[in-house]
Image 1 (cartoon, one colour):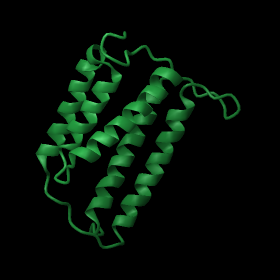
Image 2 (tube, rainbow, N blue to C red):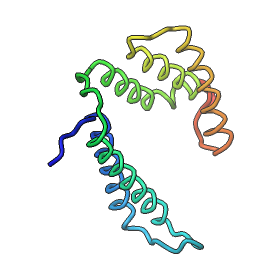
Image 3 (cartoon, rainbow, N blue to C red):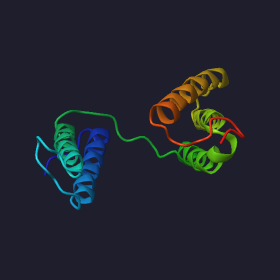
Length: 150
């Protein structure tokens, strides 16, 4: 068996394959349809197949090229981002989409060792505007934009 020379690419390939298999399994309960008249199961299956092919190619490539070993696992960023997302879900209907998104971006950015408050705040403001534009205005999702506006 060939040695894994690029562990990061190999692991990424396995993750792609796993998500591809999951997409196919979850989409198998929906009718496929045809290419001209796609059913609800068509896109998940095609996406799953593409993910499996891409992941397989990435994993095979990892056997041929040299790469750095996997870095150590850092729990702080994972926990900070996960807690930020959970808090976003809990407060979005109470404080509004703009403030919840801004809080999510700033708090998640704090997980990085390269955190800069000014950059996080600017990114949060821009992303909050984008989120409002896409989800509330574009897709007409019923979420309050500001506190008390819902």
